[in-house]
Image (cartoon, rainbow, N blue to C red; front, side):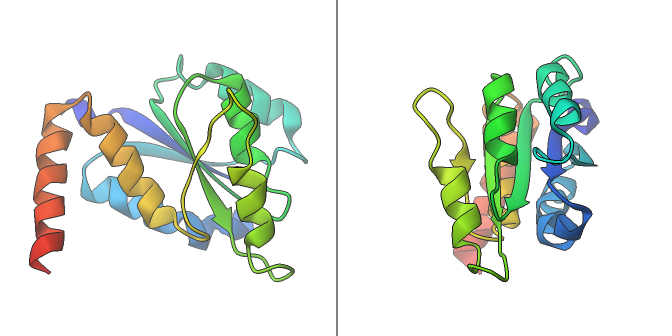
Length: 154
């Protein structure tokens, strides 16, 4: 199956964000979409993060989901180095409840967009990644249509 190839990268700024980001991988698995999970901090690993973003498309990724908390620069840094769609997941924080993360991700300058979901909204990030891939892959599109119908019925 073509859609089992690696398609989506799920990045997080810290290993502690793993539980928040798990729903994104669960959505991708339910659609049979390949993914890879990485920890890559824009602040503590800037060169590793830049290199990932520069090489992402060449390495087979088609969409990137990036979650980060506090001064949540990871999605924006990734978006500045790639033409791939980037979906930002603001991670809830103890300090400001995630508003700091949300504002850090959503307030991108013109020309460097990051699609942003709700605080801790990794499930919707996964669904948005599916919708993006459904534009290119008919089998994913068919599964997405069924999924959307199931929402109506539930």
